[in-house]
Image (tube, rainbow, N blue to C red; front, top):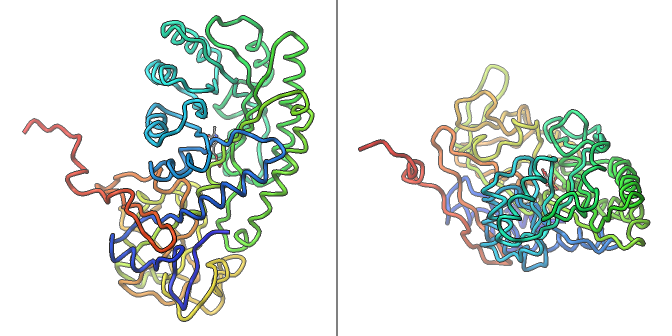
Length: 438
Ligand SMILES: Cc1ncc(COP(=O)(O)O)c(C=O)c1O
């Protein structure tokens, strides 16, 4: 569960009212709960305790330095996919021995940086990449470890096509049947290829999807070891779900069941001395963050009312990019007391009775700039502060300056203290890197 509750009708993040954060830092603003991050680390750790894995938080899901630092202090390693993310990881104090480096297109420059930094494991996605890692490691006079990301041709039926990564039609990994050859002993002089990595998509709702991929990974490990190769690490990636709808919030503990089933299926490999890595992103960060946004105007459209808020698709892209549904509600609501998932209007499906359908849209010049269409909401007015829930993952980390709108501020709440962890971008920030010859 997370720490976003209404107290006498006022949304609180831990002990701080949402209104106090908007007053201090304006809107739109991303707000995170430190305790929720910590609790979710514990939930993930306990769900996968049967494997004692290295937990590498997926930096791409929520990459603010303060967040990474907090998670590193909780004992997490980090999963990075670019030189920039590696820079963040090191700035946040992550030990290089707890950093894994994934991504389909690592440049020579990124590999040099990562090898110099002493990154623990490279998740290589192609033969060409392994050859390049070998070459860069030779030039650096080092020997490094790599896992091969395999494409198991396993896709989850419910995962959005843009975030499904385990199917044969995607660009990710090395097709299972071609992977075996890459584990041949002494194929590379400066890379020990000792791990198998899979990441099936984000999120993966069905445990059966993981189990199907794990079976294929285990068979691959058997074949590799039968022909003289050696597997030390199995990395099953991330994609463990978070809750976006109120009903899912009430069922969050199901991560325990999913983890237990996965651990169970991997016990054979554990008995053979393999070490495990997981790369959770959203299951730790999604429900640790919300977006506060103010209503600028409410107008009557042809079909229904439209509320125009001060955040746009440049601030939160998921609804228009993935058709993602986030619960949205006023930060001030009668005398309601309790967790947001129990709000009367949200029900199980966010289609509360007794409220009018309204579009919640942003100020960007795109029809796709919306957060919800035809959503049942209490009557809204200009100046109302709204909370968009479950925005901690792929929220700020996907934000842009489109329409020359600065990215929002970020605030971390810990008990009854709020701390600014990123300034709102100014007009000067928007042009800071531009050279116009003046
Ligand atoms: C290789 C890899 N690992 C882990 C993740 C994290 O996924 P999630 O945030 O759904 O846990 C991703 C997300 O795209 C990924 O590409």
